[in-house]
Length: 171
Image (cartoon, rainbow, N blue to C red; front, top):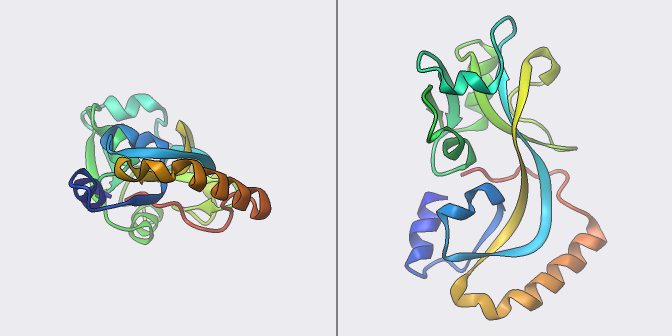
């Protein structure tokens, strides 16, 4: 997403698809297409038997796994005191967490989409950090398309429903 924001600020990207609303402050050149494509929560997952609450994010002695790139997990941690370990893929995050190489991991979930970090998320402690919505975004230079795009996208969502079986893009 960082590359898209950089290119967008130069007017070289027309749209970004299925992005979390939490990242809007990072991309002022883009306008939200006001049709909700998905909703969910961002969780702090913790290994069992350790303290699991939002306060661990401000503990300078803790290490929290997040996803690399410009994304919601990084934005959540930017003003926190805990150290971060950046992970490039969901598969790697899943592997590291389930093998207990990380005690803490921030990830997202969407109803009916499944969990990214564990086959059985109830096996781990979890705390909701933020709720999110996902939208398409249109570059300001294309704002004349917004009313027609909104109408068409809303009709499509009404016909087929919100995103149920696709992974939301974090970076």
